[in-house]
Length: 412
Image (cartoon, rainbow, N blue to C red):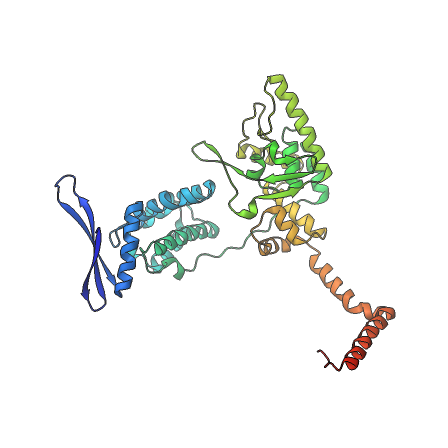
């Protein structure tokens, strides 16, 4: 057997695990580990350690530094499990900030006060070159990264609790988004007609899709007859220059979006132009080709599209409007038009309707007033309309008579 348990005291056991022969000396190597608790606890921990040794995820407790653990967390969990852009964000924070500041500290000795001091230092002098401070929002991202990493350490049995639970991360006020009005949208799209990105920006505004979803769209994902778009993947441009396609992060992200006749007309014209351009190059347009691409069919770079949007909004004097604000504008205009929030949630691909309501309730002016007015009408309808009042009285009278005839008790 590779491992066994030895009783040491009343509530203490030792795990002894064989690691095989040492290649240099030819002698057997053993791993020893202490466990406090019952024999059942020791047996459970032995099974966990053996599994971690077999899968290559084992880290020696007490001797591992936070930096060593974070590197392993990146390779074993972050990159295989999370979206590429999310993984890049975690890696940047870990390599640029967390490891230089906290990496030498033993993982098992990490305490909430260590993290609180780190946040304070970053807020006052955050850059590695000793100049400038990080914003509360950025430091809060550091907290989220640390909390997620240490939560995995708890699940892997390396920590008994998460030190980040005892820390108060910096607070920051989420800035209000800028949204486009109906007139702004007409002005923006009229100006965009002369650019190669007209169909892309038009689709962004009329569908509420994310940039990564738009750039990954294929013609096979669009049904121009039924006026529908199917979101099945996203495009990510990594820092090493590679472009990859991945499925949406959540099941709600995989969705169908109904298109308006105007949006379908623009996409149909875009496809005809694309077919003509490809014919001139001797390259036929296929169903699995990208909807938005360069002349040869290669993917558009996300930053290139964003810069084109910035130039467009400057030309129309709509400064401060980001490409992602086209998505916010789509949602807020639909809510203002009285579209049910559940439909808006499905179009945007939010994981829950609560997220949609929390995100967009403050950017749809007039919804509160309309709700109050509707409530007032409901309560005053009987007072203002005697016919309705008499109708209600007749219904109540009929129910009371029926109850008396059957000898049934009144329902309250």
